[in-house]
Length: 354
Image (cartoon, rainbow, N blue to C red; front, side, top):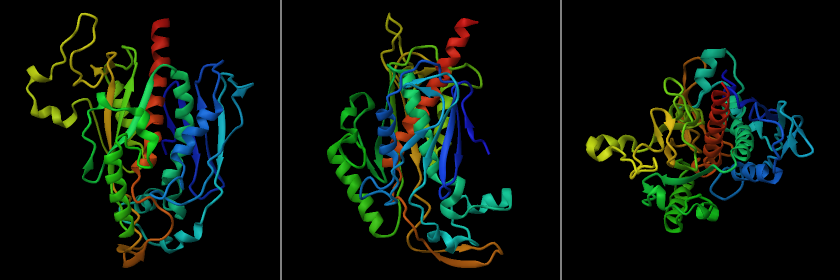
């Protein structure tokens, strides 16, 4: 099922949306790292459901309990095991889809692959699994120390933030429930989400991320390019439909003479169309990328689909769902970026040792 991410700094997750708990095992974290438990819980609180009126109203405390790998506040170098209890499941909300498939969900393909599925909230395919990624990412952030990873909502529907990444005030990201670091744009985004929610519909958006103070030399030049691993990390997040870094698709409109990042004498570049990565390796400039999230597939309105026998049926969406996932996706994007950088940081250590 691909439950493990990373090679040296390695996270394995387990659990289902409506099971007793979800959890994970983090391997490879060096011994002696002093952990700020409040900082870990803060990241969890940023992702948890029920935090504002524009997200799902499922109420989960998402308190992390660590079972191993930590002694007297420091990592021991052994696997870090943790668990997050599910306390507010309403499995009866999903009884109506026991024998039918929600469009654009994993219901149909799970049945085709395994011949059996947990239909309660999507089971293992639920975005609730991402809470475990946030725990691993929060530890990775503390391991990375001086590297700053800042994600924010840059677009909801057709409402987009026009401020360049280099001019963003990341201190304003948490000032509103949308997590857009511009109050005027955030207000328009929130208004759109509320409007869509009243219609029983959903809408997508974009989370942008800027990574600062990355040392040059992280990444491998062939298959394990830094931007390729970041892309895989982001595309593994539920509802993600696209990833671009640096100039991205806009770069195709430029001439090579415009797009080339010319060097300063100290090795920095005058422009950063490369997005901090050249040849699959970090060059010391800011890494920036965008992640596109589709509209949530569950609609709180009647829709046509098929059942297990191939019959056409009409289903009415039920349960508690996000009308737009991007506000809660911000800490998930940061967590996955942190896991990638932590993994490459450990690999860089072994390369130098060799």
